[in-house]
Image 1: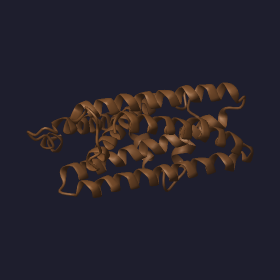
Image 2 (image 1 turned 90 degrees about the horizontal axis):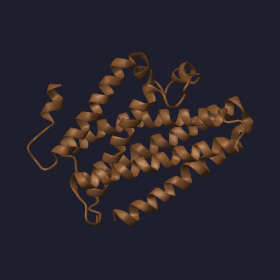
Image 3 (image 1 turned 180 degrees about the horizontal axis):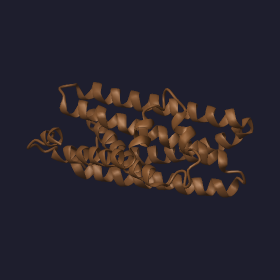
Image 4 (image 1 turned 90 degrees about the vertical axis):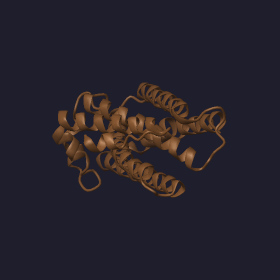
Length: 225
């Protein structure tokens, strides 16, 4: 707690410290409420035990643990996008500081809502949705783990003397690497259980990953840059 308060200095970026403290507070509450599950989350790159224990939960995706980590995802990835835009000195029209972060946060919330809507539509179109739901669970779990690592990296790049450009590339590299690993690993888990799920995974990637990402990317480029 003392360390958290030391992060706050009297400068125009105090809001960044507040966001980071909010994320760390949510993580602390999550660890307190779901201690075993939270600790097992960090075993993902090395073991399937987390998925073995929790892939049969109901609800699988929208439960208290995942909902708390969703807030962490939203706050963390919004801050990462803000930092990258700021590091590369992109020509951001009419917004800066917390106002820009707030706009990114809202746009990312809309992006995640769009993906949720498309997931519901995909579940209607595909009769057997068990593989889709499991793939979504696997992928979201890896995203949550990535968010936890990213907030730790953000603390380093924001409060150290590390060059902003280097920090931005580091954030992008770690995020891209973990996302790619998560997609490959999640696909393998589903296909190992049912080799006929390949078509479902392809539909998922097209409808819930590629299309929303292109829409969001176009929105960010048109609105923020």
